Image 1 (cartoon, rainbow, N blue to C red):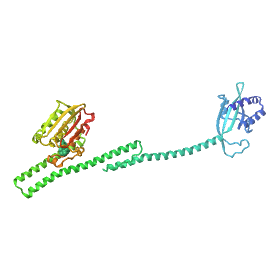
Image 2 (cartoon, rainbow, N blue to C red; image 1 turned 135 degrees about the vertical axis):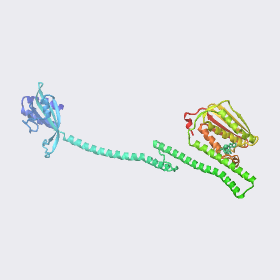
Image 3 (cartoon, protein in one colour; image 1 turned 90 degrees about the horizontal axis):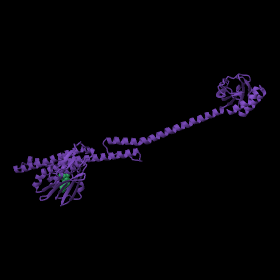
Length: 440
Ligand SMILES: Nc1ncnc2c1ncn2[C@@H]1O[C@H](COP(=O)(O)OP(=O)(O)O)[C@@H](O)[C@H]1O
Ligand SMILES: [Mg+2]
């Protein structure tokens, strides 16, 4: 642009003096120097000199020329697709067109425009080059697209594979088969999900096993009294015993029915706790509750020749379910009386210690062997099956007490020495956590 401008200044005197020879040689020389074509136009747009000697005397109406003639601009330029001219001796194929750029500059004398200088040069090579670059860009973009699509397919496979695996596992479990686990690889969210899933299926498997064991145990427990009753009834039917024996048999049948009744009652209690049923939590006064338990069991103890003492505070309030707590305490005191021989004694004490109510039930009874201690809270577990049956036990009392304790977020522990005695300690929080009444 600058060069065109300085050329315009250079050429001004020749135009001013209508020196056609100088105009022409300057146009040819400078055009060659710059690798283009120079035209000098007068103020009307008529070509005075053409570096290629083709348009002399012709009036040019290009926009760039008009821009200068109208005095709007001192310079202008524009791009044109033109039919190719044989440039500087080289021949061009017919019908081929070329991209050209036209620069124009005013030729000024004494602040008056006296003519227009036009410099045109081919930019076809630039256009060709950009075309080539565009083509290459198209290939590169296509390549990038292919890579991106490929990568997204691979990544989505990587993501969906574990999801698919888990979906299959869930379907498997939903058909009631809980032994299925999924692979846990890495540390990402998917792996955490897989680990949680495995935890869940393991719990389900355990629950399922416990459930079927429980049903098996419960039916087994029912079977014993039922078969006793059957034998007794059959002997009465077919042997026609004398009235005294008959009465004895009926007494036995009555006892077995009591056992069945106890068993069913305990099973119902357990299944109610199991169902996570919403238990109403209220303010419970533990001292009077414990006193009632002791009073109700006192006749049995007296009958057996077992002394019972209670050391209770005036009042001790906590939040819990009165019926359930009564049942738990009653089971503990009942056991102590049951498993303590004549002449022994049972001591019940209650006190508040920090945030807990602490209830102790100790006896001077038969005690529990060390190897049985870890199992006594299990359902149907009895140390001495024969003795327990004699006393009408179902083996469910302690597991019920344990569940009730858990329901109150408490703790039930045992210490025992065979032949000397046993102490059960029941610790219950005085205040319940807000969600306490949902606990099962
Ligand atoms: N105070 C105790 N002294 C000795 N043994 C006990 C005492 N409490 C519980 N046990 C043992 O723990 C077992 C489980 O108790 P429990 O669940 O109440 O069942 P059950 O009283 O019906 O036999 C009892 O069979 C008994 O062997
Ligand atoms: Mg019991």
